[in-house]
Length: 169
Image (cartoon, rainbow, N blue to C red):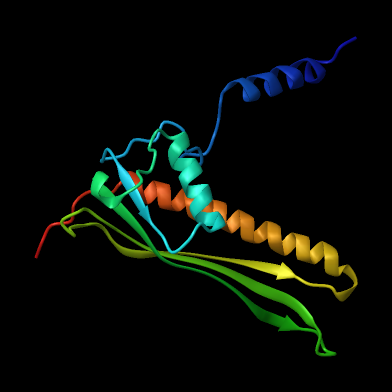
């Protein structure tokens, strides 16, 4: 005989899967911008810039080739990664690193009117370390930097969504 619990559990799981739950702001689909065109002013084609271009293109905001064609200019002032020792073992070996990723940017129009104040996206992660797992920890470090870069792209797009001309003083 089928118990009530065995009958309700699959129904509950089906209802939960069908509700379409997702965290607010975690999905960058259907993004709306307050401007029509954007120029990316960067110092080079870093992985961050490539991912930002891809994300903007996916959201129907194809960056233009020159600043003269753009309504808005997103200047990536700097992009830095850091790696600091966070803790040591009793024998003086590294146990944890703190990884950092920082993007400095500013957003303005052709008349140099700020649309967003100069701002930084700063992210940190902790990487546990073990000398016996050097290759695995190197891969984990690369994955953490990639995750931070993806998070920085998402934060940049969310900031661009709320961009509007700042009042002049």
